[in-house]
Length: 342
Ligand code: HEM
Image (cartoon, protein in one colour):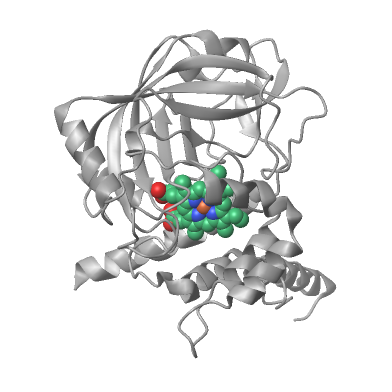
């Protein structure tokens, strides 16, 4: 019988079903087709030439690496993260080139890239994905998406429309420092002599509860030498594989601490060079593994997976990166599972 009590229960069940359904529809972008979703980003990366089934749609060409981080204890002044206490922490990572081409040309790639996962013990992990440029190209995810759309090859010519990309950059002067770097920086002879930068800012909290905004850089301990004029398309990956067979390669981890008023939410703007720098330890890489079988294959170097003592800033790139990497990761992992079943 339809008593008022039964009606109320049915109404509660209907709401309980409808609310999550509406949430999923919203997350997937079905309720607002013009909304920028993680899936749209990954679809666009695929359209730009990165439809690599079972592999990353961006930064596709890569190599797994491993080693350790030796904390010197100096970082504890700024963050309570376990990795900043004196000690040795296992590291796994991945060198890569940006873009969806699994056979990208190392000699032309800029920026170069490094993803790292540092295991700080007690379930504390610090994941990061860094570039060799001193700044990122754009401030907002929506603008980066628009650039990716413009980079899609025109079916008529097989190339993107250079005039449209030129006009886009004219309308986005914030890209100036990145473009200037891309055009004029001196390429080094190795991943080992390349710096890698967080670009996004993060909030560091120390054991006294004091907060500072930081960016970080891994500074190469291998001296700079210029990229050879005859560098081949795989020279960076061949070089690091050979170097690590001969011995370890290291980088110094340096934190830069923001002054009040420094741009925290805009990765296109570098901080002045006179900001406080703290050398907090040394990254030592010892071996490589192919990405088809190494530990990095099934790792998502999501930049918001952080240990206690570090948290994301309000930079809008960070949540977008996290969501897009997750979508890409989910696709490639499920594709790999299907490929392995065949
Ligand atoms: C909205 C902006 C961005 C988007 C949409 C984007 C997108 C992506 C995607 C889809 C991947 C592949 C993820 C995977 O399957 O694991 C990736 C990898 C990567 N991204 Fe980004 N990215 C953005 C900004 C940045 C920035 C600002 C940096 C550096 C500060 C960066 C550094 C990297 C690196 C190093 C990798 C390779 C990680 C690996 O080896 O797995 N990206 N990016």
